[in-house]
Length: 347
Image 1 (spheres, one colour):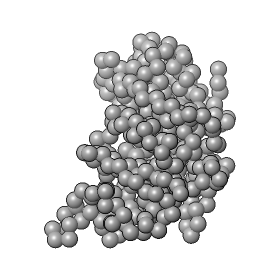
Image 2 (cartoon, helix red, strand yellow):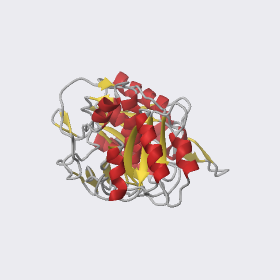
Image 3 (tube, one colour):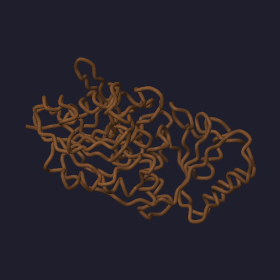
Image 4 (cartoon, helix red, strand yellow):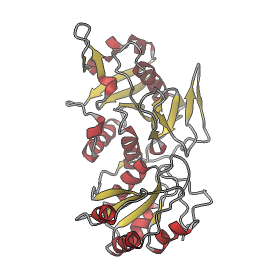
């Protein structure tokens, strides 16, 4: 019998509606089977763990990622799979973080949640939770079908560090525009085995060090020097995500170029990420992106902003030389990068 641990961090899925006042109240996850009797039909053992003080996903931070990783590490040999119930707003950040933190993972860690509270009649939370549990307990012999951190939402399973929240108004809230779905659920769950990470033997190792001295500079038409200089000159800044236009382009502006050059000279690790939902950064394809090659900005290729930011925090915590950190950043840690892309040109 498979054993699944359901971990509740907080979020919309953990609310029920008071029948008298109709107000939304926190749900006691110790009574999960009482509220969702369908779970009794699973031929597996379901245990629950709830954060003492559930967290709105907007308040998620690296300390909570570390707490989650410690819970997973502590229970790793006891359970066959894990389901993490999480608010949707920052689920992609947490999924990215766990995918990078859990080195040697060979069991399913499935994040899910809902757009409507689990206590409401039209909630999407029940289906999301039920299917996430089924995926977490799906094995072929002694090997789990999913050996990675993934996000399940509205009939689709996505790689955690490839996932974006794309819709705040509909049930199909998430997608992975630069990577195939890992699975689709209908009457049956159809796994895309070619897209899944392969099983790797070894022990789980947790990397829980982060350097949060990072920032995001989003380029836009008409941006003033006072805007980008204020970000680049943040005291103690160590890493910077530059969200650029199209395939990695930014305005030809002497003051902007000077600020980027200065940041590079000061040892700030900068990563170029496209603002487009889908596609790659191709530094040097246009004149307006060649400057980034000149100033040592790392091409983020097809990384999501969420994955790039978490990875940047972790690389900076390694305290290596700037060149070494750039090299490590461009390594594919957990399937987050498409290194076979024609736009990837290792030095």
